[in-house]
Length: 120
Length: 104
Image 1 (tube, helix red, strand yellow):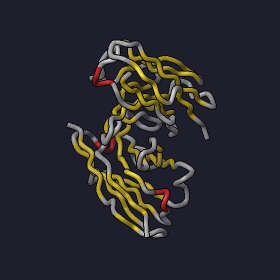
Image 2 (image 1 turned 120 degrees about the horizontal axis):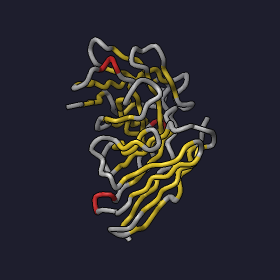
Image 3 (image 1 turned 135 degrees about the vertical axis):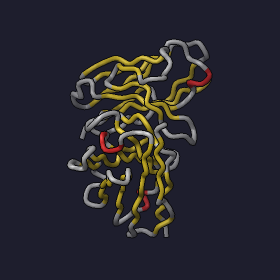
Image 4 (image 1 turned 90 degrees about the vertical axis):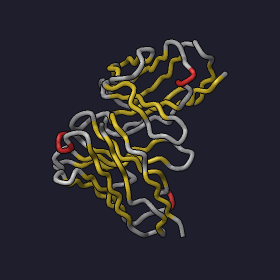
C-alpha cells in the first residue's frame, strides 16, 4: 500500500524558515517524481514544487522561486521542502504527492497534509 | 505561466443528473491534463490523467475529454458520494480554481 506521510509543519514567524519532510513507502520511491501542493484555508489548490525521480530536475511555482528548495533522499525515501523568508500568505496545508510517472506527471497518491502557519 | 479557468465555479445538481465541468487553458497543453476530486478536510484524489484516462479504481461514470486548450469532466449519473470540489490541473503545475458540486 502506498503511503505518504508529511511532517514539519508548525507555527513560524514571518521571515522565518521551515523544512517539511515527506516519507514514502509501498512503492519504488526512486522511480517517481514527487510534488508539493498547498491549500490556504478555504481556498483552492496551488502547485508549489516538483522534483524528478533522480533529483536532477526541480520545478517551482513563481510564488516559491528563490525562497523554497525541493530535494530528495532516495536512500531514505524522503522528499523535503525547505522554505525560507516565509510570509503570511504561505499559511496553508502542504500536501506531498507522488507523480504517476517521471515529470511531467499527474499525482496519483497524496499525503494527509501538514499545516504551516506563518504569523507573529 | 499557463492559466487554467474552470466553469462553473459552483454547480447545483441532483442525484442521477449528468454533470459537465469545463476547463480552459490559456495555452496549448496537449493532453497533459488531470482532474482531481476533493472532499472537505481530505486530500485530493486523482480521477482522470492525460485528459481522458480513468485512474484505477475510479468509477466509470467519470470521464474526461479534450485536448489543446479545452477540456471537460463528465459525471454520467451523479451519485451521493460525488458531491465535492473538482479541480483540473495542467501537468506543468497550475490548477483551475475549482468547481464545487452541491446538492440541489
